[in-house]
Length: 385
Image 1: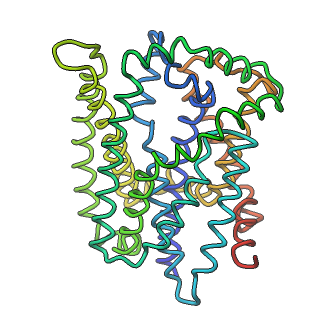
Image 2 (image 1 turned 90 degrees about the vertical axis):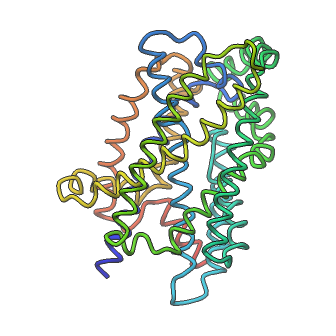
């Protein structure tokens, strides 16, 4: 029982850690519209430019990657409970998550990830009986496809003609006006017409990446990683070292590639390389963070420092939804109307303060309840629906 409790705490600490990165990146996305996000960092200078670059290199994509891996690992743990056949419970669990996600995407924010997790979780459900080698091969194959696809998309989006059309598009000022000054219902109408309808297309593009990450988490579950952390410690340390070195290489390459604007080599080749390297950096960066946290948890002093994150992680669904509801209100015109007005350097300290308050709230809540409110609802539907 003690080993099981320790394993769960470490998973919750990782989830809590990932929530900070998710919050920070989502704040930068909620600060501007879906239409304008690709060009929102143009013209930044000084500390704002450095802040945007830092968020892109050290946070962008890496923390939802951690969440996706943990989701796949949690899928394995859920499906391999010995007391009963868990298949009907898992299907109900995914159905409710899909409902949460759709409502969240429509009512709160277009950037929802929950509906994607639910749908791709069902794909993993039907492929769960593959061998360990098959699961690992599937993970690596899908992640390679995702990196190549991201390179192709970057080459398309950043093509000079298309990029100029994005910058001069009338949709950006229209979206800015709706987000910054519109009522809630005008924003809801805009979201339904211009954002939600693209969700199926977005799902097709993101499916390889999320499915590959789910497979990777499922593989780690099969290997019993969190039940045998001490036995795997040397491998975790090696993973940390390799991913640290690889991440540095990818960052240097990205910094060299990004300023390229044309010349003897076709622009598209550099744009493709930028997208491919960026996707590879999300993988090595997330593995670097995960392995680093697991190594630190092996030291008593660091375990004490990181332990409060378990409260955040145990209420991950609730805290994720609270983050998007609160910051949507802060940025959008129907709330405080700070859309597009905060400097990039302010995102990190604001996210940190809000995150620490969430940890405190989660700790107080869990003193009186076993689960967060959304987790309790999810659990109740799963087992009694």
